[in-house]
Length: 325
Image 1: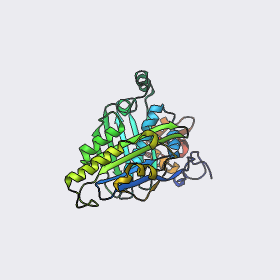
Image 2: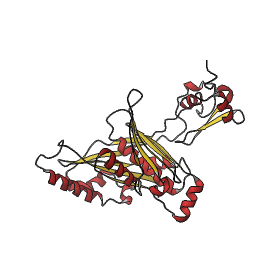
Image 3: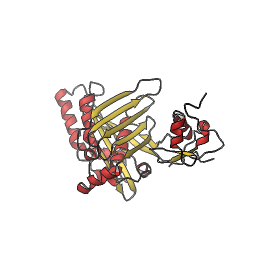
Image 4: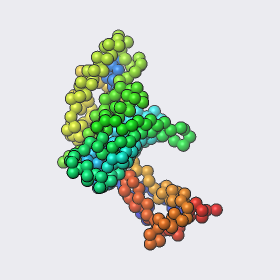
């Protein structure tokens, strides 16, 4: 099979093959759970070796890589609540050293993402703050959460200003102000002896009566939520990133006395969806003059921001918007 990143005799629009990227699936990457008869549900996300595969596609400073890993884990956790076929994406745009942060995950667990850093601005920040958090890296801007249900359905998007020092605090701010949903979010990402690992713990206070013990009055429900928060607060980054500690054991250690019920786990996978055909379609939308400016030595190179692969197109074979009949 020819390398889909390089020109070949096969027309570009027919080349939908996956490029040479890691083929990794984490079978139990997302573990949903709830507490029986209590107003608490949640998801535990452990990317395992998938974090290493995704995060090492780009040679970023460790502080940027940590932020990207947290975003990937968060996207997987929020996508785990989807009730339709589509994808969930997180996008942050700011005026800081990391002006663009993006991660998305499909309902089937296909995960991708990247962080774009401005090297000079990042070096200046690191000179005074060796290990900056999300607030310092992103600066002022906005955080967007988007549910894309496909071309036949309207997209749902919620946008809030970047508020908080960490990505978890920014996410909590979004749910409090835009969704009126009480949540607890903990995110962890770091390089371990086994490589980069990333994890997310998301817990929600269930509204309404469904699944809640009818004998629990409002005060008792609130106490159950406070108890769950206290127990979740004992989680450590080391536990979240420990490959030797399975998700079901970690959750059991937290909530075994609170009626823990585990739902069916879901897999996560390396999910960049780029292809030669997709990028060729993008190029065909440019005017011929723009394509001429893009070409160097008779070729146009397009880089997928997610998997960091270069796709090379012969300029003579690309017909721009003014060159199509």
